[in-house]
Length: 202
Ligand SMILES: Cc1cc2nc3c(=O)[nH]c(=O)nc-3n(C[C@H](O)[C@H](O)[C@H](O)COP(=O)(O)O)c2cc1C
Image (cartoon, rainbow, N blue to C red; front, side):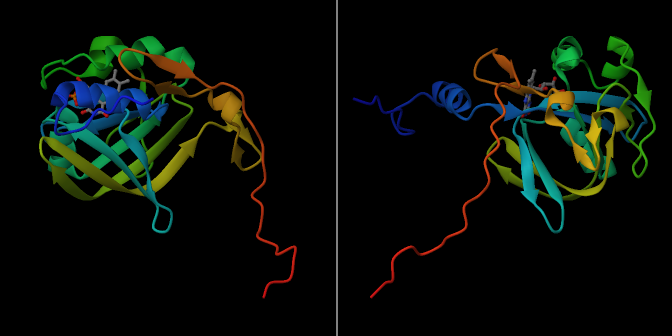
């Protein structure tokens, strides 16, 4: 027996909470931007994924109008920093709605380092950062989906196994429903199975 949460009959807030509780776990993009006035900004966004491989494009969604979205629209640049478990308090702290003239980096004492290809800085302690240039936006109601062309991915040598980022060393955090978070659980390795007909057809 399943209970149906139809869009027509469910309160929109309840539907959104339900949706976010079942689309889990979501990776967290810790997004660094700079305003046109030069104020740095940092905020977590869990509506985040890879949109395209070639060209390399990532996407995140701003619900409502936030400093991150305004800065990206003004400057055309952002950096997605990856947040390992040790940065939980800082990531959560940067989700506080600071006024736009205050920098989360400064308010929370989060150290920066210069990016290689764009102006917004990287979080120094973040093991991986994806430097992006705005590729376009698509609005849906009060949401704006932001697409960013990847210019460079900066990865700490310490989390690399050869050329490959080691997920255990990245130790990423992810968002669940409500106020829940999670960390990396069991990692399963399984090769894709190419199709091979076993019995002649026809
Ligand atoms: C883990 C986490 C994930 C979040 N994901 C999103 C998201 O995907 N989109 C969004 O608009 N806000 C999201 N938020 C809320 C924003 O981070 C919050 O509104 C923040 O104050 C926005 O900052 P800004 O105005 O400096 O951009 C999230 C918050 C947390 C703690």
